[in-house]
Image (cartoon, rainbow, N blue to C red; front, side, top):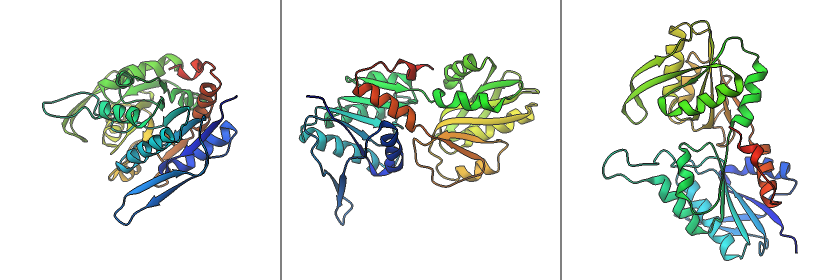
Length: 310
């Protein structure tokens, strides 16, 4: 008997899940949430998932309720006898805690991986992890997609002369070089030192941007401090224009205000995290088709190699 595919949304990713289901060619599954007055909640599948391949779509950006919701839905699917349970996490939260960078701190990304597996996930599909090695935290298959599939065609459509790809920090140099290979462009790198989390004490530029149209590449934008400071530095060093592409638009604190007042021409992001507010400088590209294609090939046991080219 053929295994049926069913897609269920977490509340924080309802709109994206709907677009994924539309591209996949199915309707979203029926799920309801019961909530108690103290804030506790309980998901309930309102249709049978016995023997089905269940895809649960939800990014796990803060608050921690988003992660808890994913865990409860995985557990519910497991206890309802689903055959395959895939956690589709467009944004994998807590990924910045991928190592011990000082004594007596947790490795949060590792803990989240173990929680997902314990809850019942038999497969993970995600995009642009903050650190590639997070895949090794799982004992289950991880399909790690790349937003370059979405961003590269957009950058090419801009037809920018003297294009240069830039990394806002040393850690993103590999990503920047990957983009430069596809776009056949030069690469520059910013070197930054932090006073503490989200606070930059010093930034320097490695490379020449004089007369160049620069595209900064990063996996996420949180407070936008790094991007806006890098854009300002590059304009000071003679860049004609500076844009930024970031897969995950966390945009916390006064990030929108920083972007509006920055030297950035535009910030291009995906909808892995629902946009909090609109901005004339922020362009959102959908990742729904990419996830739907991957999920369909996983369901049909076909290769997804084309979605892994970075």
